[in-house]
Amino acid sequence: MKGSKLYKKSGILTLAIVLGIAVVHIVQIVNAASTAEPGSEDDPVVSQSYVDEQINSLKSSLDEMTKKYEEAQERLKEIESYGKFVPLELNKGQVLIAGESAEIILRGGKALAIGGEGGGLSDITSGSGADVNTDQEVPLNHLLLISRNDGRGIKVVSEKAWVLVKGPYTIN
Image (cartoon, rainbow, N blue to C red; front, side, top):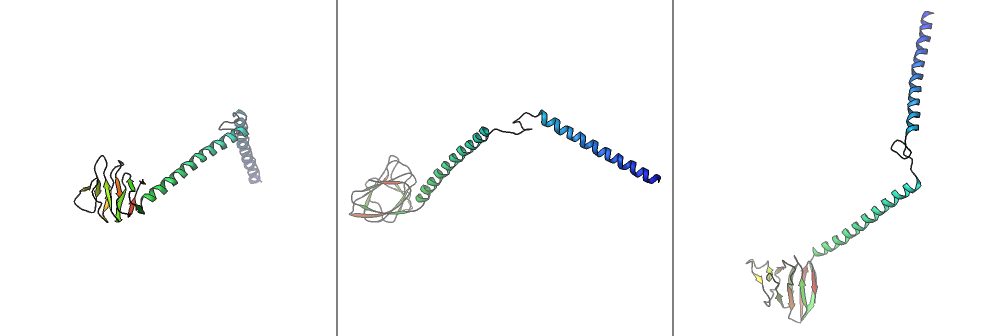
């Protein structure tokens, strides 16, 4: 019998402790909820206008990122096109002016070099390091490098000429 009374007393004591802890916890939650400022970190209630403002801000950021992505894609296409030789058929009197870092190979016909302020066309194939200067005949199948964007290029003097060009260029 004594063991039964002790068991009842310890059960009541345990229940009292659990209920006490629960009451303290509930009081803390109620106290925190009643003192929190609406819209603060503790009470993150927001208005519809705030949500709309945040969504519009995200849309603007997304639109700007999309625009930058599209610009980057266009630039990449431009760079990729500069990485390949483009075959051209030019007629007598036409002038090909190449931009900085362009490469030219005269595959057929005859053309004269057009030098720029800093010199002529760098003849990579010759191996001598010599430039092909203004009014000199451009050798067939030689790789010519344009080092600067200063008006360098070639002028076709035969009825037709076939050229490979890599990089920026204009035809006049």
